[in-house]
Amino acid sequence: MSDCKEIVLLKCGELVLKGLNRASFEDAMIKNARRRLEGLGKFHIWKSQSTVYVEPLSPEIRMEEAVERLSTVFGIAALCPARVVPKDWEAIRAAAPDYLARDLGAAKTFKVNAKRSDKSFPMKSPEICRELGGLLLERFPHLRVDVEHPQVTVTVEIRERDAYIHKDQLPGAGGIPVGTGGKAALLLSGGIDSPVAGYMMAKRGLELIAVHFASPPYTSDRARQKVVSLAERLLPYTGRIRLFVVPFTRLQEQLRDKGPEDYFTLLMRRAMMRVAEAIALREGCQGLITGESVGQVASQTIQALSVTDCVTALPVLRPAIGLDKSEIVAIARKIDTFETSILPYEDCCTVFTPRHPKTRPRPAEVARIEEAMGLDPALLEQAAAEAELIVLTQRGMDR
Ligand code: ATP
Ligand code: MG
Image (tube, rainbow, N blue to C red; front, side, top):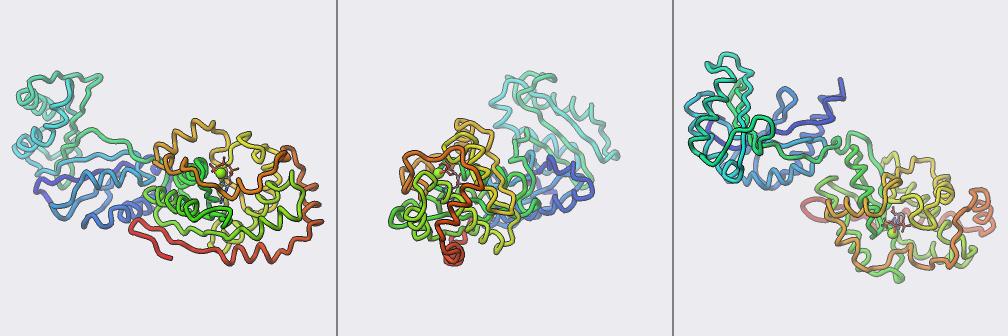
């Protein structure tokens, strides 16, 4: 263990607030981190005093890649690459300058911080700071010590087993570990908003499945493929996603032929909710997620939202509800879904769009229209039953 290797320390953010549940949250985060590192090589991962240690078990493992992968795991507030050295002052002074060369070479100011949880170590913290600070100033004469606002903070930690030399910590993905908050079905279109909504709810600990409505031949295979690509882009954050592609053409045609034109979008959205609910319940989900935002389009007035909400008993989570489009776009760029979302393929929501959609519908009125249409409920069941399942994992795609 003490052979000067680089490891990564993970700081659990909000997890520490979880009282007695803390251990199970940490374990879930570790399980997700382990999955995320799959294929990179073998790691030993353990926790001690609210820090999780990720240690590579072979020298070939690319630790920069490991850090990058771990930076999308929810529940990690910060990541801190560190060099493990024997608990011996000579070993620390021999290792520190080379390990820190790149960071200190590019900085103007620095400071050294020391933490000594092993009180039997012969030097006290101020002495470690003074000695190491002096050594680094000798090796990097362009540097200046700035204890208030250093560009680089070097931390030396003397722990039970080993000593660690840390670089500055990097921001983690934050949030809470996926899977600890239950499971929900994301209604995933090819647009900008719904992938962002999925990311936001995964960040709050929800495991996701995705439901996409496709209406061939009105919607193309490329539009469908775009949705698969969007779901794949969420995988670094969410882990495995079971994506259901619902054949929606017959239902949409029936709604167009039998219902009043200005209610078409509302009728269609209610049908989507019902089919999504059936799939969600079958898959053990406790909620639905959409990318809606109040006032964005006619079907997203508060009245229209209540008309769609009331057909499902599941809570409909709309994390983008109060965001401006520009705020949603900023998140889409950050999670790298934006460029895919703006590819110009049609969605089933843009098929048969009414010229004058109802913006202030009343639930009772819409229910009456539905009843008068006499739509066969088996059509909804059939759409849910015939949905095609695509299982998306970091390693590939199974049907
Ligand atoms: P987005 O960018 O997410 O497509 P939008 O502003 O285009 O949002 P709408 O097309 O009205 O909004 O859709 C609102 C929400 O309904 C979407 O965020 C998504 O959750 C869901 N939705 C729309 N079309 C589909 C679809 N074809 N399959 C599954 N869900 C959909
Ligand atoms: Mg859309």
